[in-house]
Amino acid sequence: MPPPAYLRPYLEAAERHGAKFESLLWANPSAQAARFAALARWSELNGRIVLDAGCGRADLLEYLLDQRIQPARYIGIEAVEALAEAAETNNRPHAAILRGDFVDQPALLDQHAHVIVFCGSLNTLSPDDFYQTLRLAWQYTHSELAFNFLCSPRLASGKHLTWHPISDVQEFAYSLSSDIALDDSYRKGDCTIVIRKAE
Image 1 (cartoon, rainbow, N blue to C red):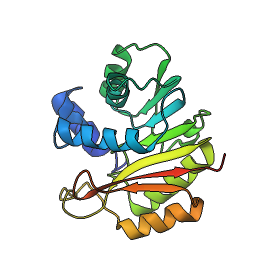
Image 2: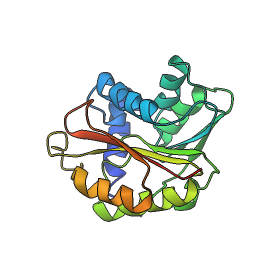
Image 3: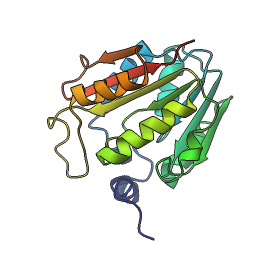
C-alpha cells in the first residue's frame, strides 16, 4: 500500500534528510519556536499528561523543559520511523513515543491525556481529515485540545499544505465548547486554538 498523501511529504523529506530539522517541514527553528510558545502560553501543560500527536523528534518536549514546564507524562505519536527514533534517543523520564498514524489509527489518541496537542501535524490533512481528527481528539482529551493550523495562503504555498479560514475553525471550536482561546498574533498566516472542557 502506498503511504497516504498527508504523510508522503514527511517520508520523502526523511529519505533526504533523515532525522534532521528539515524533515519536520518547518520553515526554520524560529517558526517552530513561535508555535510552541503560543501553545505553551494558552495551554496548561505543567504537571499534566500531554499527548503530542505527530511529535516529530519530540522538539516540543525539549522546548517545554527549557521553559521549565514539566509535564507529568509526555506521550508522542509519530508515523515517520526516522523521526520516532530521534524522539526516543532523547530518553527523557516520563516520556514515551508511540509509532503510528493518528489519522489512520485514531485509537492512538486515546491515551488518557489531559491535553492533546497538534503542532504542525495537521497542515497536510484534507479538510475532512482535519475536522474528523479534531473531533476524535476532543472526545479523547480529558481537559484541553490545543492545535495550530495554517490560516491563509501566505504560509500554505506548498502543494502539500492546506489552510483553513480562522472563522471556520473558530466556529467549529465553539461547537465543541464555549471556552476557547485563539491566538493569531505570533506569525502571519498561522493560528493557534485551545479548546477547554468544563471542569
